[in-house]
Structures are given as C-alpha cells and as structure tokens.
Length: 360
Image (cartoon, rainbow, N blue to C red; front, side, top):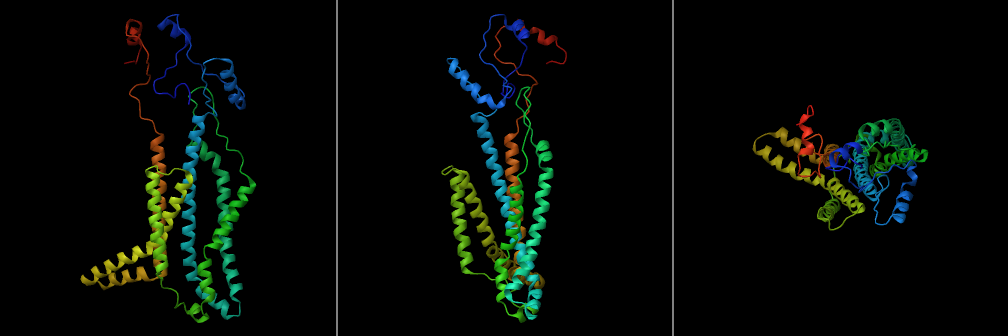
C-alpha cells in the first residue's frame, strides 16, 4: 500500500502543482517515512495524541496489513494441510502395496524361526529408512531453495520509494529435525494395519501369497464413508454460505471430505465396475468383463486406483485454490498510463497536455 496503490492517484512535484492549481492550496494528507520501522506504531500514536482530528494509517504493521497477512497465512495453511493429507494417503496406499509384495519375505523370516515381533521390527525399520532419507532430502532442499523461490515468486511493493525486503529468517534446527522425525513416524504408522495382519497370517499363506490378496468390503467402512460424506457436505455448505467461519471449520471440512473419499471410493469403484461388467458381458467381451472383476476384487488394483484418484483430487484442489488466489490478486489492465482526477471544469490550464509528445 502506498501513494500509487489507490485507483486514481497521481504524484506531481509541488512546483508543478502550484503552476497548475495556483498558490492557494492546503495539505490534506502526508506520507511519512520512519527510519526505525519498529517505531512506526509509536509515531502514529504520538501524532494522534498531539494533533487534533488527525487520522493515521500504519502502512507497515497496520490493521489492513495484518488482515492481508492473516488471509495469505490461512490460504497457505490450507494448502499445507492438503499437501500433508496427500502425502499421508499416498504413503498409506504405497505401504499397502509394499506389504503385499513383502508377504513372501515375511513368511520366509517366520519359517526360519524369527518371531512375529522381530519380523515386524524389520519391516518397520525399512519404512523408517524411507522416511529418514526422504525427510532429510526434502527438508534440506527446502532450506536451500526457500529464499530464492520466495524472492522470485513473491514481491513486496509499498507503492513508494520504501524498499521492502522479504526477510524469512533462518530455519529453526528444531523445526528441521521435527520434520524429519515426523516423516519417519508417518512412514512407520501407515503400514501398521497391514503389518499386524501379516504377523497373524499363517506361514504357508505368507509364503505362497494365496490369502489376503482380495480387497475386503465391510459394512463398517461403508457406514463410516457415508457418515463422513454427510458431515463434510454439511460443513462445506456452512462454509460456502458463511454460516460458520474460521480456519478450524475449513480444516475440519477438508479432512472429513478427504476421509469420505478415501473410505468410500472402493465402493464407488465396485458399483461402476459391476455396471461395466454387465455391459461387456452383453457385448460378448469376456476379457474386458474379467478386467472389471479384477479391478474391484484385487487389493493391489483397488489400492492403485484409489491412490490415483486421491492424487488427482488433491492436485485439482491445489490448482483451483492457487489459480483462484492468483486471479484474485491480479489487477485489470488500465486503459491509460496516468489517471488525473479532481480537476476543475476549466480546460485552459490543461491545454499544454496536447502539446506533449506521445500523449493522447
């Protein structure tokens, strides 16, 4: 915000203003630069106390600036939540796939006399290595590229000669370590369900991998997905109609809707695949009908399909939110280079405009 940030403002030297409008004028406002930015608020307070009827606006830490900062912070918080859920659901889907492939290895270790607890620790250690390596590489890449990316993508313009630098500060070591630990924890927690199933499965079924490869549809999962869908749609309507406001409400609505999609997608896939199977049977296409059966019955097929749908849904959400914010931040192109308002009806004083080169 600054002198040129408003819609119809123009900056003129005082001598030129006097020549155009005459010597009789009064100041209705002033832009003041405070060299010590930490004292801007104190300067505004002193001006209002010692000057009657004056109104000041803090362009550095004012209420409007804080509102803009809070709105941008909320948007980035929502984007972070969506990315975090995408990571978690992708990790869960990949962990299920990895556990299916590791059944033979788990059965071999069990047959060699390794206890179920030790076998589980071996698998968890493998996942912990994935989280550790990914966490270190990702957080280190963020530390190295954060400042260049932000300085190139985001620019601060005060509208005057005040230079505003984006100082993000240094990354906390505790935060860096916390991100790595969080990645390890997520990688270890996601396969817990499948790992517990594997430790309770017989050695023969683990080695020959002829059990627990079919996806199991349960009524509890269907009921939970319907409940989450109803709650999510209700929350979405409240957010869109502004019946309830707040970042916590938006967060809860997004999480519930994503959980509903994650739990309910296999049932949607089963219903669609059955319809397609009947169609292909009527058309005498046994291969396509068999593919429909495999798509809804095999755990690997359902997991990969769900992973694809979740990734596309999250990606579209990120794209819509990012493009909407960019569109909201854009300003329409003006039909002139300079807008001058507040002029008198007499045009004689402004006839010299036509004598200027490259001015229409």
